[in-house]
View 1: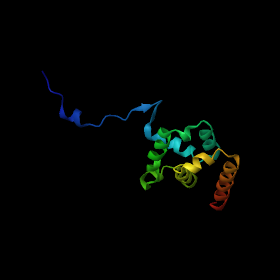
View 2: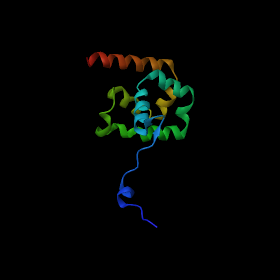
View 3: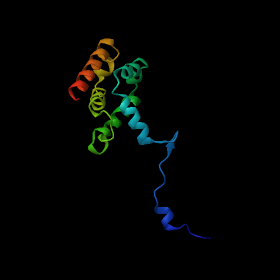
View 4: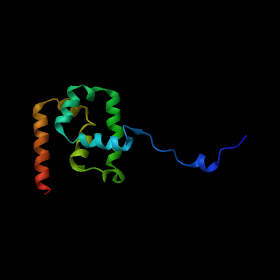
Length: 116
């Protein structure tokens, strides 16, 4: 009986893919979508922001605040602000309000104009 080679046993396994994408790529795409106030309102209207498992997932995504990951964000300002706000139960409830969505949109537009 032959023994498996130690080289093969120590090589890292290829990261699993989901629809052709790595987990990191999917999480990056999702976390960037959180910068859209209308999408946050949609998540709230579907009651996802009340689901403890989903709230835990949002907490898990906090790793994007670390410098080694924030560099991958296309719009770090709005993305990280949304991620921070989503940690607050009151915000997760208030984002259902069209007035809150409108205010976030206005703040995002003003910030983008100032950063030009």
